[in-house]
Image (cartoon, rainbow, N blue to C red; front, side, top):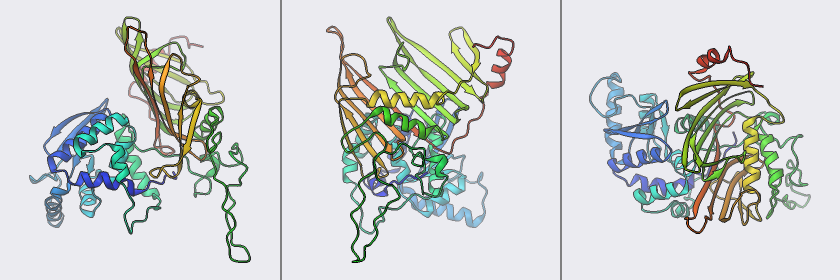
Length: 466
């Protein structure tokens, strides 16, 4: 999937995590899962993380107990003891093993439990992506004694380390597995479509081919070659995503390029909003969580849980949609019980989730000021920071900042927005926020929910809503 993540940025965080004792490390991991939306229950040297119908047993292993765990594991492997026997702390049903250091001992422990391994790089991904900066700072301040900004600033390259190492397909597949667990039905790191020439099917995974709208006049296949005197030609000019320049942004062009890129992919899309308007403009969310599991434009599962702002308070809204191609089935949980509806699926230029993300990109990145750069921890993407006055956000707005990470194809893997909504004289100003992020791009399948058969039966005799 073409993601390149420098491992050096995890060093400062991992070094501090390795200094935690056993109890503190378990508490840190449990707190990390909680800020990602899970309820946690401590169970000795591990904890149980629950959310909706997901249940994970997570086993954090600090470096302070490495020798003991390693020795116990070696003895069990030599004696061919059963997983269910004995009384040491390596025994039990474990889904995820977390450690602040890579090593054979950690891999053996994960293999022993048939569990997924979360090492320092993935652990830092869980801390930096899919968590608000406020929550991440509170977590690192409490356990590590520094903000995330400070920790990233400390992440200098280590001598002898290959900072340009590419993530292998095997590594990415393992990370995607952890990602799918940590979202409501899986959430964590973010990857973009495979760039042309990376060895995948460029026509189906990246809009940088013949269909793509070029972002500059530079041929992306052009490379510098030595001339007759042995000197290199001038390097090619930087290539920016569609709609993006060195200090400019056409959000409409970028939004369409993003839609073109993501419409050919399977993915998980997570959206969180607080005190922001819904796309239809008819309502405002006090807070909402939306999760789309998209296999294709015709097959997807979409869940919404949130509170809609009303004149006299907030009203709980929760519903789930599923389609396998012909009809969209809707389950809504209301005060009067569960209700099922269905209506025909329509796919116009884009599917519903692709079009939603296109509108989000256009709405939140259309501002009066923009900065474009690259950051060391995400070298395969451009960072776009839009400030000033937003064109499509209503009301008196100040302190507006929208930050997007954009692949060369135009794929916006992550979009985070924060601003202050100024209130009337008698009310307090409110901080509004929006976050959109993708996970498991190109590696997502959608299964019918457990209520699918019941929904089909309940709606079979009803006239289809046209």
